[in-house]
Amino acid sequence: MHPGKLFEDLAAATWQRLADGARLGVRQGETTITDNLLLEIARLGSPFVYVLKTPQDKENAQGTDWEWWIGTPLHGWFRYAVQAKRVGPASEKYDQIGHRVNGTRQLDILSKYASVNRAIPLYCFYNHVSRARYHDYWHCYRPIEPAQLGCSVAPLRVVARALAVRGGRSFDSIHRDENVIPWRCLVRCPTFVEVFRGPPLVTPAAMSAEIVEYFGAEPVLYPKLPAGFPSRVESAEFPLGSFAQRVQQLEALDPEFYSADTEFVPRRIAVVDLTDSPDIA
Image (cartoon, rainbow, N blue to C red):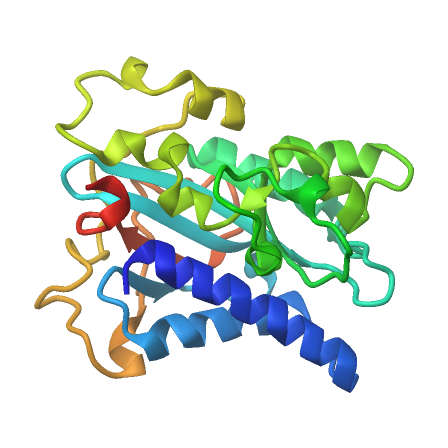
């Protein structure tokens, strides 16, 4: 199963899980949904994806839910710092989007973390809503598939605007923004994967104007992964097999990549290797 198909299946499963949770009165928060995604990644044993547990305590993990490294060993890696939020089944709002940790907004924690660690800050939304039409919320060039909105992503500025306007925290308001897209776009759509096709870039200036516009700045393309990460997803360092093998515990974070200037760390780190993906062939 290539990364695009994996991300699509996980989004559709999240869409259905939230629908079933609302129907059966079983509420699941962001952490539970994220853990379910982690379990599915491990259970499916995808040779393209592995997950790392970070060394942390309960307090310093409250700022960033995920960190995603997406790319190839040949071309380099985009690094995403990700905060997850779930839509409320009754309100259809992201009621916790303005959550604070020790008085500081999670949005500001994510922004600082991304800045000092040279990552791309994103929000990942876990969704299910019932609509007669989804055209207003669909900003992917592929045909409309409502279930792919089960996991959608948005740049930090979208959430900053949502917090600044009345009624901005709703699914409707946020997903009308053209920058809110299915999360599969990060591993499938040309805007995000073009850099991983063909020979490596000679200069970052060769990045497309579209990706710079989407992120609001030219993203860093890391030539290597941090120390402690397996060099390849499927390797002697990280063989396919049991859940324990698919989810590796880091003993420490590489100081070359993780600044001491921020006290928060991601709960989980996922590495997505696009080397053999048909979307970059």
